[in-house]
Length: 120
Image 1 (cartoon, one colour):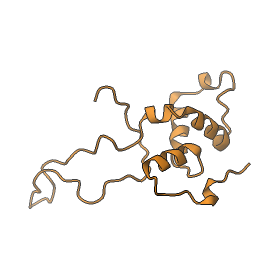
Image 2 (cartoon, helix red, strand yellow):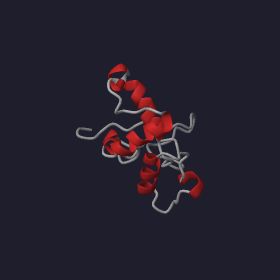
Image 3 (cartoon, one colour):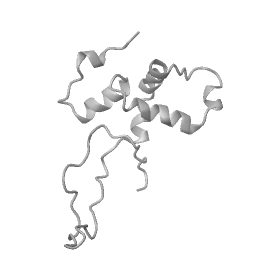
Image 4 (cartoon, helix red, strand yellow):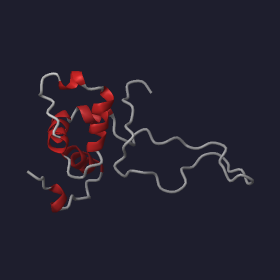
């Protein structure tokens, strides 16, 4: 799909429930002839992340001790190295990026006070 960033592998719990729907079910195998595709608006895009880069930069420093302002750091590392750490922040309930994205996707869910605090 042109113009849309690829989804990440991390989900904030917005999984589809039950039967995803699709074509007729084969009575012998119990498998559908075809399945409905995943909704296009599920998941987090890299655009979602990059527009909140200040949060990610602060979280990388707080969580992993990675200071992106350190000269030469990113040149010495691979894109995969950075990707692993950024995606790791999406699974960390104390990270800023996790909390902001979760609040946008699930406005009725509040973060418990003990999860919102940072260890300084």
